[in-house]
Amino acid sequence: MKSLAEFLQLAVQCVQYLLTTNGFKFALSLVFGLLLGALGYWAASAFSRLWNRSFHLRGIHHLLCASALLLTVLFSMVYVGVDAMESVAKREIQIWEHQANEDGNLGRELFIRAYDAVRKAGLEDMAGVEDPRIRQGAIIPMSVWDTKKQIGIIYTEGALQDFQKRHPYLASALQIDTRLSEESVTADLLDYFKKETNAKTYPLSRAVALAASHLSSQVQTQIPAIENYTRRVLLALFLILEACVIGVISRAAYRSLTTTV
Image (cartoon, rainbow, N blue to C red; front, side, top):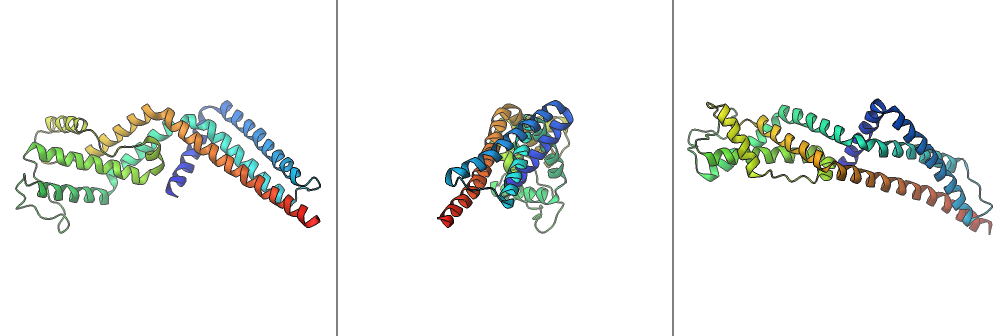
């Protein structure tokens, strides 16, 4: 259900982007949608007459066809507007990055996860470090490189998992792997601690930024697949809608025929 809600949200944003950036293309999609919807309207009526030549659409059937026509117009606009998916998806990633950095619960959850992993590894002296479940504000010792790498991996993987949770549709379309390569994490750690020589910890915001950069690069390389995936979903929804409308009207025609007989 959450994936469907996100899909609809992205669809609306694509149409808005199309309207503000390419009015002519928006108008063409509107005209095409009206023509396609009118064709579906006619097909529903014509198909019902295959069952019963004397059958005529009633008020409820006209309302059903009109609703299908309206949805067809919307499908058409979104189908064309999907061209803006790259811009829309990157904007969603930027919004998520801000949300993740502001989410205190996420930071606490990942800090506890890192604390448990470092304590279990036994590479640091954790005697004076209180359990963050009991008292907040503790700092995990990072005297050895393996600890820094371990925390960096936990934070970046946790950030990507959070993105999957918040954006299930985009995560599915991107086919996100929640594990960044160790090379990417290591490079960012080296760069951070080279610049921040007195740093005692690796900030979560840095890991979130690394995850966001990884997601944005995936959008750029996989945008054709994302657009095709979205258009297949739209086409499937359109066909299901038309099948339901034609099915309901055909059933009414068939029932009218059996009643008459």
